[in-house]
Image: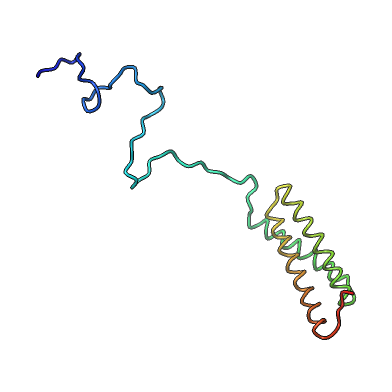
Length: 139
């Protein structure tokens, strides 16, 4: 069986394309079926955050929040006054952190929220110690 080059011997395994023009548009290539050992599908999309959290912004937020809490803590003259001023300063700091999250500087917001949490924790330790001693200082 001697076949001529112009007969119907075109197709897979013959070295010639099965149809001309090709079935796919130019610029696309056929995907081979992979074995699964090395996935060969299209690359996964990469999603980047528009405002990533950076360590420097977190550190500056912690410094700013710490100074804020310390400033208000130094204004008090009694333990009860310290507790109330610290609670108010902590709530204001968390509101500022929420505003920063909404506007995009999430690193500073994280630092401020962490400093406010530490300051409020110290104030609540003072309240708890005084309460154990028999004095409730928040009323």
